[in-house]
Length: 593
Image 1 (tube, rainbow, N blue to C red):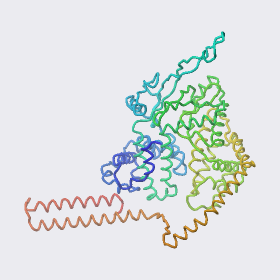
Image 2 (image 1 turned 60 degrees about the horizontal axis):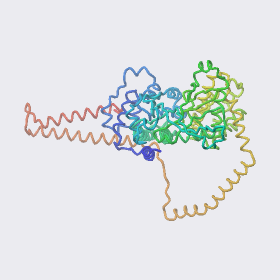
Image 3 (image 1 turned 45 degrees about the vertical axis):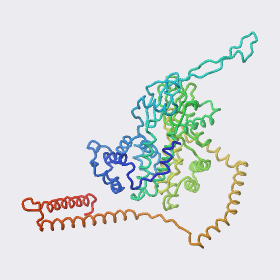
Image 4 (image 1 turned 90 degrees about the horizontal axis):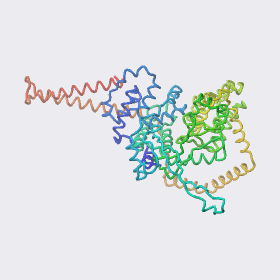
């Protein structure tokens, strides 16, 4: 992992009331105000941290933006703020528990297309990584990029690869003598990280962590959703995405999982040419999966392609627990013989065996229509954020089952069912585990693509064999024995450690060293109000002293004079007037007359 970003993750939230990143902070605030989010800036009380910066910002949104809805303006703001915020928006688009559905729909449209950086900067990265320009490493390197995004850009290249050629003749020459080496040119793509990206992301992550902490302190409605935890999750995900050695290892692991599957092609990677900021992989020449007309013209079997694509994603999720988290049409190509090829492995999802089994229990209980099992399964895959009324949850789940249970498989859409289920649990202050959101996003995306290729695709029907296999595997004798032995070891460990742990607690009590930590909620708004009141009282005292002092100077007649009035006293009255006007405007602006 990049050292700069690693330090940033460890120090998330460390900005507090310092001015470490004032320029970037002011830039972010300008964009928020520009797109009409002044109310958010005010509610977070950011003026207490960057008072000087906010005074210089024009707080009126541009007139041409007023015709756009708030979700559209949020998307536009994130696109303008750059890579970190674009990636954050893409993450939030998978979190219906965190933001309303109208924002989700808009954030899924975030564009990751940015102008390419110059070849000179690319050459500088190669010099820093390899000590040589790309022309000396590759037999051919195209200076014009194939594509550019917020994380990096991609170039075509070619390198010479040696291969053995057997020229043994029929006169009995030895096999080894008959072999010679020849050069084979390999077409590859070279993904290069955008210059200065690590430092920008490090700064943005610290600012986002500060925003998240302010949200938890000042916005009561988001406290249960733990914005700081979302930022930490986002930091881990982004740090993996910008380290290309992690993407390389993900591709290698992915290839290992599917090495015997002829229906999928995994691009070859070249570790000898790759670093943290440069990734070299095989260039794939195929047809984009959403290009239905071209696929039809070339004679591809679209229903087969749709079924294969869906089965491959479900195998990734339910068998391997390691899946492509962004299988949108631009990341899936179709090769000859209806072979599927995934590209761009920057975002990968992981599911523990327990999570896979718990989600399987949920889906199978939904299919069976057992209300009690559905409620128990929902509680297993969710995190409770507040007080839970279990009876109300069960009633809502019963209504949910009535809505879908009696439809035929052809009428069921996994995307719609899962979205409604997430909305339901969110109303009860429950949220899915973060890795499950990524899984649902992958399933939803691949279902949409599958229906584009084959409108009769039934994802739920295709998923059932994978889920039933998970259920059967859990009941195999070898698995049961393993689970029982592991449980027994855990109990033995607990019994072994219990006396020592109890002795430690009693010792702390005896010496008065037992400490309890309390987290205060709802006191910070009061603290802010008290700070504002004390500041205004202090300001008013200084203002009164200024007026009294100026009056005394005028009465004493101290020169110099203007129109018979002492200039120093006159200046004092002028300053007092400005201070009084400033105090009045501040009170009116905060709505506290």
